[in-house]
Length: 89
Length: 128
Length: 157
Image (cartoon, rainbow over the protein chains, first blue to last red):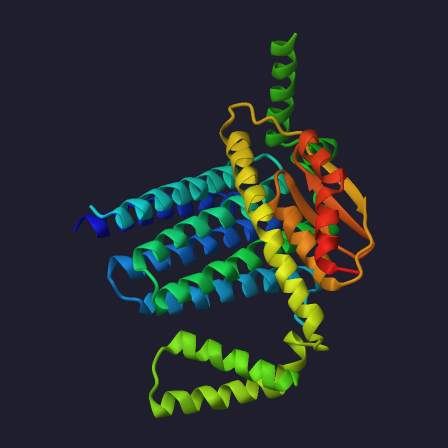
């Protein structure tokens, strides 16, 4: 089917972008660069999950994408807050 | 090919382009604060366009409303988390890359330091 | 009042996400919405003032098209900077004096700065903002105070 092919190409392109950002997450000289890379990777992963849901025609993946978006936001805040105060209070 | 599929393909292509450019920007910019710009802007518009394309493909259903909720949430959350990373780095006193290299050179005499000074000298030579 | 509004919002959100109308699922939704509304009814609707809130939402909707256009411009500027071989950036830190009356104005202004071309918010407050600009040309657009006037128009009074 040509329709699923569009989504597959888009998913592969976004996966390549995630690998590009992985370089910054591994190499990044400071913790803040790594947190930035992890945040960008998380945003791309949400889009990737939505695309996977469309490739396999299973809308359940959208729930996972929504929860992943929430967790990604909270995780970035938690990492930086822990770094700043060495505690999560 | 329906007209709906063509619109979806165009939106997905443009959105993927912006997301790849954001990834290249995060890797390529030399400075921590400059890297925040692709994180806050490129990803926001890229994901909005890709999810808009999926919404056009799906039509007006419950799935479409879920996609809209995801898009609006990332639209609000992405600039906020970029601002949070920026503030954490700014408060912790992150400097630009050049200043940091100079400080390291003043303190230690490592191999990396020598190569960076070599680069600077060669840069001056080529300029003159 | 805020309790009922929060409950209705949470229940509508539950129904949107589940999409089923079984007895057991609707009952679970009512129970969890009641619990959320009981614990955190003062978070979303603090002190409800209907007329003012509605006017602000309407003015926010009128502000959105301009913001979307700015986001598109920002992305093309970013593409130019990223794909340019020499990467013509000259970073600068700016301090902007403002006087916002509401936290909502501060939040909208901070997110708008991050989304418009070439600037990222570093510190936000009612009195002053610290902004990182990626080139001098984009910094001038922010210092002219056009966006601040628009956000103050949303705040009203």
